[in-house]
Length: 307
Length: 255
Image (tube, rainbow over all chains, first blue to last red; front, side):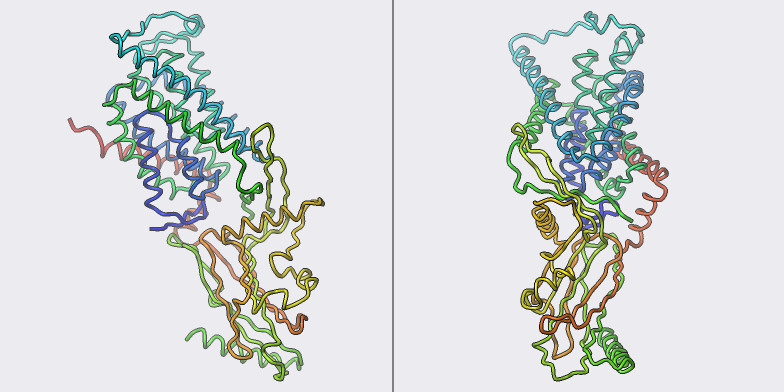
């Protein structure tokens, strides 16, 4: 069944879009990660312009995250205080990112910058997570799991502005989460992603948050940042296609529920291994795209609306 | 039936016009089966017929000496073509050219191949045929390569088409052709042009307009998104939050 999208200005199959929303929602629910970096390329592949894909993809992540946060909040695994600090850092980051995108669009290098950002970030974070996951898996196979000590001290604990985060059982400075929030907001603005795939490992390895609170809190942070991204794109660029968004959401909210259930049943070590493999393969695919000669050297830039 | 009636009316008015002005040359009269195309939620493209008649005071000229060319042009806009080059192993956009006044849609149908209808210089002057387009761009030697790439890309998207031989003649004076538009046609004002050629010379030309516009929910949403974007932005987020909460409620754990 075909439907015409009023903002994207093309006709697409409803079932294809539903399936795409469902698949991305499943991944989001399972890992608390990864709406945008899958959704944006999917949408562009169906012929939707990158600007509409990025903006509408962000609005779909809002719905998936709301649904995910609601599911996680029931299990008391969202550290709202930590989330608010992350978002406080994320807001200026997002605005800066969106502004830089508008500058890069002028020069025609936005595609390259987005792809390089994806390859660099996904590649390095994915490999980091992969090696860590493999190491823990090998370790746990030999010996009983060694619990990381919550009271472990390192540089993060030396910073000022200490706050107590009760759900995360942490007493740390507000500066690292603020900085992390800024970074993920910046990347969200530039790459049209939630930034969860950066937040989750950063929360685990830098903030040392307990794994139980990481996914819910990251979903909460992603929710706020993508809501801001959606708002800015819809208001300034007018690139949010609400019809497309609703179809994606219908698929996505269902997917995220099943994803969250499946994710809760899988051991977190395996979960980390799977998400790192997914991220690394995505980075590889984009890297290959950048180095293989294009079929046509020329490309026509999407025309700006002239009405 | 409606078409036949319209055609009759057209013929009469054309005959009257020819008599009034006392013209001795052939005149061309053209009409479309639709002059407004509405884009609604089930829009998957459009198809319409351009038809017309040659009003010929000089009836001795055989139909085989006449040629008809019909062109449908979409709204024009500046269009940028980028060229990729290899820089330290990575393919990136290294060059670009912006053309002014490139139509968002270009369809041409003719009675036979264009090179048999008129001399290249005549076609070039009138901008008839994709190969004879002269969009304004920067002065550079490889401009033609960029223009060819633009035509190649739009043709692949079915936004540019050239169908030589697609104008059907019914008898000596009636002609028609079918225009097919894909779902991604730009919205706006279109121009339908018809040219009559005889012995390589343009004898008569006629132009009509066609409007493509969004209708119903498509139009409402589009206007909402563009005219009150601040409220649209708020609505978009509200819809997303409600969808998410609704799903969480429906799928809540029942234990």
